[in-house]
Image 1: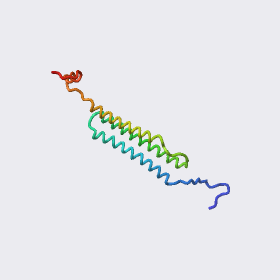
Image 2: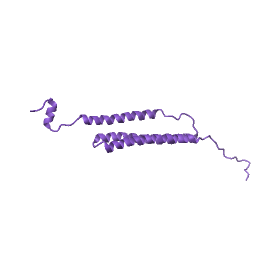
Image 3: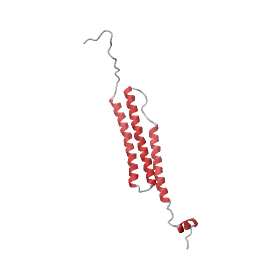
Image 4: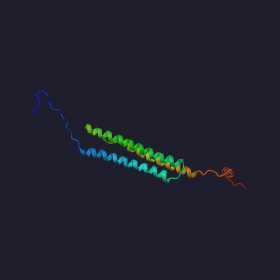
Length: 142
């Protein structure tokens, strides 16, 4: 088959697409997911073995919310970077802000967990009116 005189073949832009870049993107995505699963596991462990009460549920909710947010972030960044790879964009691929945010979140969640745990142990409600009087005056009733 011969081509007609006036038509031209479509031009194809052959960019150098390296598979290692796609695999690096996938490895980064899987690493973020591993961290999210660890955070979710901490939340579930608190919920299952932390005892009853609202304090344990609050701590577990904080960890689970962080894990869910990390999963959403990892998913969006994976697709954003994959699209940049498909287009052949150049530029910086590192993310300097989110690792710092994750560390601060871990510190915050751990502080919430310890704060609620120690607050629970420090305060023991009085059993009856006599102990309220005893606690308020500092001496035992006779």
